[in-house]
Image (cartoon, rainbow, N blue to C red; front, side):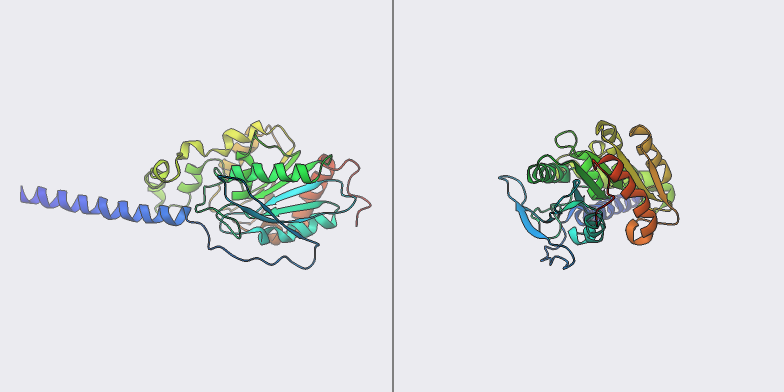
Length: 292
């Protein structure tokens, strides 16, 4: 009896310690990034803008209006980053003839918000940003480029707000799968992910079963291209292929040897060769030829 009682106490202690540990990990995963003060790069004529809406976080961003533009493009950054992470892409696109719109998602950079929501809650941000860009550039086509969290937020903005063309980088298929790939013990990854994600309804008001870009991407109904790293430690080939299948065979560009990194910095020629012709075909009325 004493042995059984001791084992029961030991098991209870392990469960308590494990539960506390998972709760702390959950706290870190959803905690907002420290609020920052950002300075716009000097190589583009950025104008500072802010979106204020009752009951929603303030969103801060920059806009660079290219006169004679053949379209405008919204750029949304990844997790634990801010709009500066999109500055090199913005310069590339501006030089190719596009106006650009960069915002910090809620919980990042200069924007408000107390938590990060895996792209699901940030879908509200993306919808607001797309609506703003539509109003600011009336009569022009609108592109949307998102990396990781930014890509997920664009998918979850559907169908409330739609761009005319999408570039989605390093998008995960389901939160459960990408979380499992981050877990330390290979043979227990699924179980660890389930335990960690079980706290989501209490903390965020939605569950991991709601956070499935693979179920939403096919509803976009607009031209899109997927970019992925071939050795991404968080997004395996199966997830990427499931996304491509759900998006009705949209083009997919692999970056060989790339992990979960900035794909433009990793291989700029491949990035430009994939993205610029795709945008020219699907966004510009007359292509990018002739623009400086």
